[in-house]
Length: 168
Image (cartoon, rainbow, N blue to C red; front, side, top):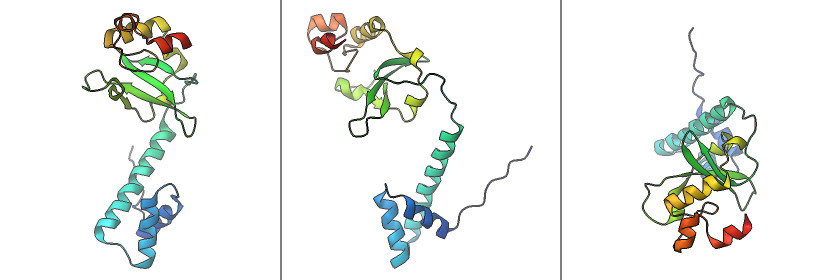
């Protein structure tokens, strides 16, 4: 079985795509530059690279498996032994996932790193119970709900801070 690749888009096609990317000032600036003065080779390479990345991301999203029971609420989750914290984005209200990296040295909040697309792969059954989350909080010295660094010995022992303990 042979696979065929689509021909590379022309610069005009890439620029037409860039005009439609209203979320990106860079794409808009490049399109304006193209229409007014032309592009340098570096600018052309940059917009072609952006185009290729966006197309690849769109294809990956289209090919991603559909999760039967997607995550619908914030909390702590575990998938394949990796811990994730799902939060609500302040601006949009959308959920997103942060991967826990215990090896990171610094503030507790810096140990959670954005995990692009992971919220679509987590399922409701991956959610940790409160006791599981508290055990992790105790192990890592972080609140199992908000991820804040725990300093009070009672909170470290419980794996949850006093404010979050009142909320759950």
